[in-house]
Image 1: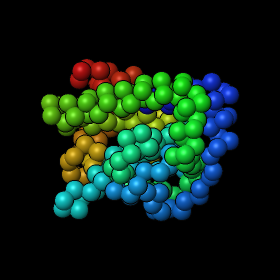
Image 2: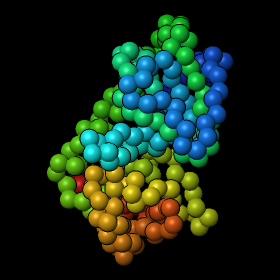
Image 3: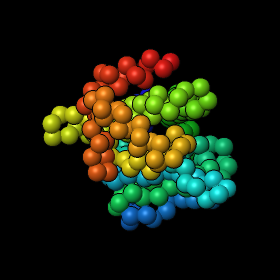
Amino acid sequence: MFYNWFEKLHADIQEDIHSAMTQRTLSDGEALFRIQEASNELYQVVTGKIKCNIYSQDGTEVVIGTLLSGETFGEQGLIDELPRATNTYSVGDSVVNVLSKRHFFRLNHKHPEINTQLLIMFSHRMRVAFEVNTDNLTLPLHQRLARCIYRIVLNQSSKMAQNNELEITISHADLARMVGVSRQSVSKELKQMERDKLICIQYGKIVINNMENLSKAYHDAN
């Protein structure tokens, strides 16, 4: 589901982009940019995690997603020249590559293939956004949650646990914000998924016991 446009480019174009990038180190909780700030840079996660969020009118945090090593973000603001639409914060210590607007447009002009890959990436993002919105409008919580976890496993490069089972590092509270319900409701559904042997709940993370059945739960809801 996640489409890494950067990795689709030829190696020489990737190298050209990397040579124009600088690196920035962020400490835990440090903001990279905030809503309504000017869009002047594009980013690629080198190490660590970057959380994207917004806040509702009552101050409730809504997590848009978590970006891991290799993933890029900030492209849209450079193209449409509109202010940032989300906040981004480092989760733990992180390092990001930074590409300025000036270099972005210079490289875009030099390598038309960049535009092609960006169009494909934006199309993928629109499809996922439509899918998530449809889920929230039409599916019961247990199906929305299973599909949310499935997307995280696919989109965020989940690592293999020592017993060769997939795991994702995420709190019940963050999952609740992603599907728009209370933490208590999410915890109840996760316990049922654990009883069904789809997952194993551990402190701060979820281990996927049966990716095949989780995939089936995802596709059966289509």
